[in-house]
Length: 172
Image (tube, rainbow, N blue to C red; front, side, top):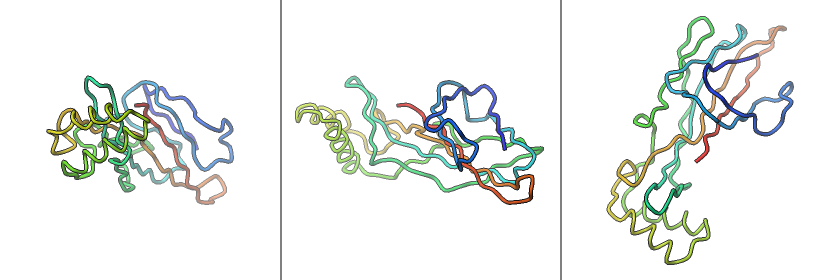
């Protein structure tokens, strides 16, 4: 099977030989996925998508990813006609995020800052920077797309069913 996503530039991460692999991982370089489409070969019968989103803190101190505040969605089938499937639901407003309170946000910031081996004073500065945030969609917090995964189901030339996965990771 082969696939094409127009105007998206990504670099293969990991193994170079994909002939016998069940999946491939790419690192995103440029292009827009949301609203774009996937064109696949005729032997693909179903395309499903899921993504992982993560909350980050972005302010004058820099960017701090909060790994403990990430969400992975369940697989959803994409609508397609003539082997062309539309990619949807990846814009910043429609990304799913964990429903957390002020205390959980502060704990996540503290945990992430300590994991990045910051000093106590620096950890305190990060905690103070989010003290007024009550939800993950308030500044200085942002919900960011971390990775998108697609699952392709179909039949090979011998009629044997197959399932392949492709993942694109986004840098912070």
